Length: 369
Ligand SMILES: *Cc1c(COP(=O)(O)O)cnc(C)c1O
Image (cartoon, rainbow, N blue to C red; front, side, top):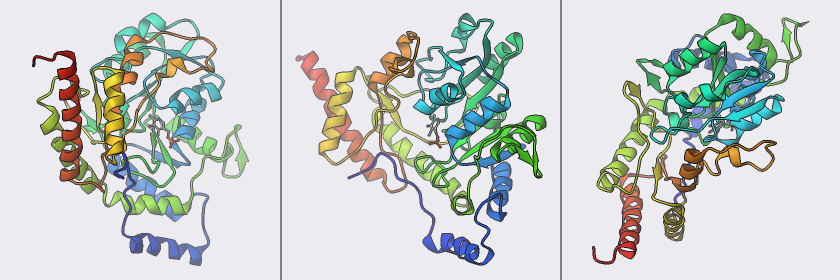
């Protein structure tokens, strides 16, 4: 079976070397050497003033919402992973969905202002598949209405915009280092922010609200361990190679799909250095998608409907909004295998199967061609 994603793993000996030292120091967690070293290395690699290493990307968002003192309405995107919405709900805030742009799949900045009310305190938007939101327009809106901005940058590891890290935009950006992500620490996440007063707050919130033994605010335990940090330290040495490899695979998909108008790819805006974190295709409708997915599955190829469903449609939400573009795209977007355990022949094999199915669909609709 070709899986849709597979974690990159460093050579076992490299990880073991880090881990055996822990049997000597017995310092397993609570901001040990590996955690602080990883934080320094991430800060340098990503080019951000600070990157706190936390237990996962979801708690990273909860810390961000908490640190910014948000308690009412949060404008957010319906096209993201469920955690973007649940972290808002878990903080007892109200998500307000604003539809997305069909080209980049990110929140439509032109539709944000219409949804702002007196109770709106923040915007929590996702850089979907590592494609940047319109960060300048969102910044202008935030300044005009005194809103805080959090970016769910779970997919955006290593992405730069105008030659600076995408994580530098907004008040706080959060990232996931889960095993399915481009760069991983098994489980893990990061919180990046430019404002030093929030940095201190986040640092305290991560460890029970304590600073140097003093209880300064009600916090949580969002720390991560030396074992997880060690995986990060190993993987960071390979991440450039991993990105280059995934870029090559993505281009191999592109070279087949470019010829077909019925296979749509999201657009990467100008001035973006992309990270090739996912390979989504948008098909003409849900039936074609299901057909493609089933055919591939029978040939031993796993794909993923990501993201589906549109988050504004989740049953447990108290008030429902309509987001036609997100609802439409979530029904016909499919992520294809992209990881370091496949090669260009695999990609060509997968791409050709898809193209064949699309040809058949076209013939079925229009028998003469
Ligand atoms: C993976 C992901 C998260 C959650 O990250 P975890 O580390 O699994 O908690 C949040 N948002 C998006 C967009 C994601 O893809």
